Length: 374
Image 1 (tube, rainbow, N blue to C red):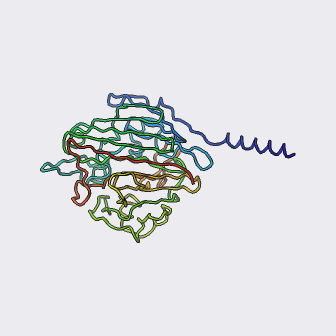
Image 2 (cartoon, one colour):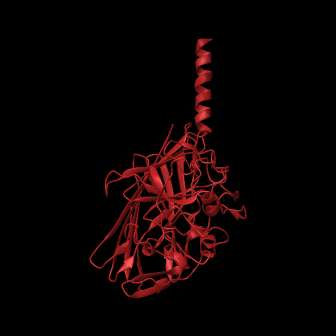
Image 3 (cartoon, helix red, strand yellow):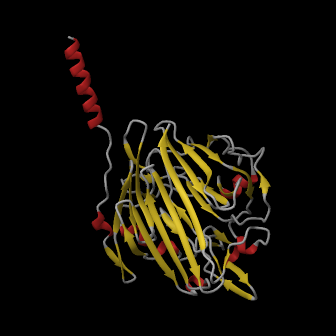
């Protein structure tokens, strides 16, 4: 009897393992096309327990599969299952993309360098958001190097594109590591003074794309100050403490815990859509900026960076009209973006750390998303 029981238990264990959800790659042929005369494709990277698909249109992360505490794989980033939707923007434009040359907002679409006033397309309530109408997310990047676990993409943004100065040569490296990390490394150089602030804009749901609210995700942000914004999400120029406000995530708490608190900044952002000033110990080393834990699946993500700030956006403007990769709608507050960056609208605030890049200098930026379970 003991032998029979043991065999039955072994069979159940094998059956259970066989039923675990596995990685389901998207059809690469749905991304094979020319855009602006350049070839676009879909590339697959794998290392450790992570599998990721990337397209060189907008240097976008299209899928990112990670296991839960039971070993079930789920795609935890929002996206589309074909190139046409990324090009034509049927709903959300920035899914999984690199954003810039100036990530976040520039007030009234203008800044001044020396005695020259530059103006840019206003694409967000009278402001310039994430590089304007044709930012880095809407161009085809060159694929310089491809290995089993990394891809190097480059783009030369010509002087005057979207009104921004300088021929800006940008190189980005996406790497998956055996330690279950997704690492993003940026390098940029210019031949004319220009402002640079580039970031990565994956929308995460640690339950999986389209699988429900993120308000029960438990968030930590290593920041004791934020830069408050006006009604069109432009920084006022102040840097204020988070203590005693809904913006205090120095102790981990559910994202939705304080969303209904009466607060002017929550009204301005329609929830969380703000820049946190990180409590850094060094100027340029990688340090922990934030972490997110989803209790049901056990998935846990840390965000490490060498940048001074983090934009946390809680999916406040998704309205359920956009359909994701697996036929499920992308709904209100069902995703989060954690964008490592410099401050928004820095060129128009002398008290913010500078984003000016001059010829002969290099812009560098590293962000690491580290995955696990607990």
